[in-house]
Amino acid sequence: MRILVTGTAGFIGFHVANRLLARGDTVVGLDSINDYYDVCVKYGRLAQAGIAKDDIKPNQLIQSSCYENYQFIQLDLVQSDEINRLFKEQSFDAICHLAAQAGVRYSLTNPHAYMHSNIIGFLNILETCRHNGVKNLAYASSSSVYGLNESLPFSTSDNVDHPISLYAASKKSNELMAHTYSHLFGIRTTGLRFFTVYGPWGRPDMALFLFVKAALEGKPIDVFNHGKMERDFTYIDDIVEGIVRVIDNPASPVIPRNPNDPSTSSAPYKIYNIGNNAPVKLMDFIEAIERKLGRKIKKNLLPLQAGDVPATYANVKDLVEDLGYKPSTSIQEGIDKFIDWYMDFFKVNV
Image 1 (cartoon, rainbow, N blue to C red):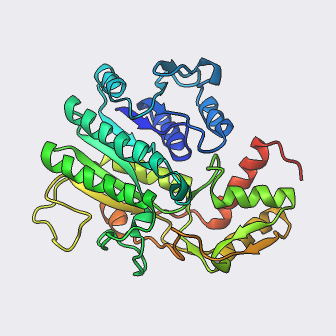
Image 2 (cartoon, rainbow, N blue to C red):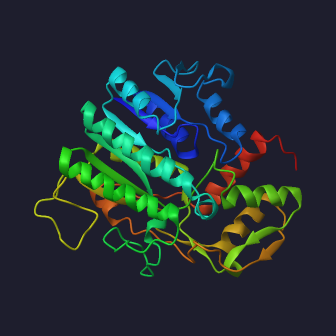
């Protein structure tokens, strides 16, 4: 297939593109390369895929030096004319839309960035699919849409009308927008609610990255809600496997539809959770880091932050039944792999 993957300088997009390339798909990667976090990590990911920083020019396709079936373009999704031109030139079979302004806490201080990337950018993807006959769209949603929902594990049949951050609201909006385009224009849309993704090449603003960096520097870490947090930490390879299976099995209408299940529709629309289905206490997560590093980490115990939730836990029943897949990487294995990557990338000696 010829597939557009947006967000390929980002954590998940980088890994998805590499997986698709390895199996022989033709991939065009797209990213705006914004400075939300250290761009050195973004350029490092691109370099791993054969896209050199010095070769990148805005709105121009760059050929990978590692993969003959990979090209990259630096492009902001709000540039609707440029997006439409790219679609017309490439004739994509499928879109994997992972580009977004991420981060719950950042949305409290920079709300306009979320409207720019997550609403206008997503609308441009939908419109361009509509006008260029692209019928297969997989896109990133988030477990944050569950908001004030206290029923665990989180199920895609749960009501998600009470988000507690603008980031979550933007992702819920994406799901509503996707359903509209599925119903009106027959675009087969599948939303993926990711649960706390971690692993090599991860985001520097995420807990694992921050904890390991602080531990190696002998600094304390901030532990919110006094450590009484649980997260359904999901290793990156498990996330990628789920995404690829969704690309290969786009949504179909459900007839007759179950009126009590908002994750399905009589339109070709579907929502999946992708989580480890095994929540881990934050203190146990930190202890796994300590075991790998062979040292204790100093901790600042703080109250729960605004926009955050005490626990996440994914019900992945639909993922198992529809796609025959369930994430399985253990926390210790995933953390060990991340720390090995971190120490190699930053040339850390212990």
